[in-house]
Image 1 (cartoon, helix red, strand yellow):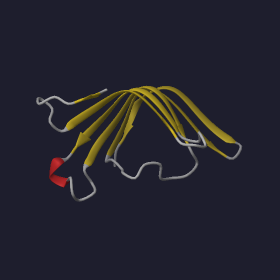
Image 2 (cartoon, rainbow, N blue to C red):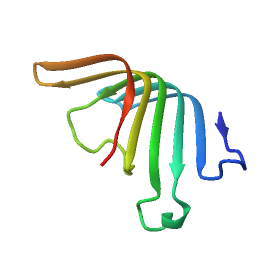
Image 3 (tube, rainbow, N blue to C red):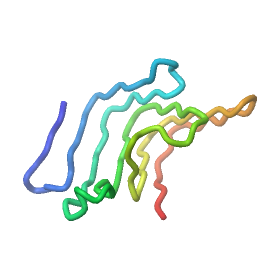
Length: 101
């Protein structure tokens, strides 16, 4: 489901999302994704200000670029994250926090 409210015009919310690539090296199953947009920069390529992933699981591949876009802030709310490089695996549960420049 996609939702947008006039009270928060810079936000688009997607609910009950499941995304994965053919190799299953990248998986995202989440209850909600919120895109906070900067309308002033919509044509410059830096339109995504904040990406919020809430209540789900994220499996990251060892490659660096997953999506053809980037955001200034990545925020996780009650997310499980797994990441593997060779024999080294990182598993984190119930992460709530953010990454910002």
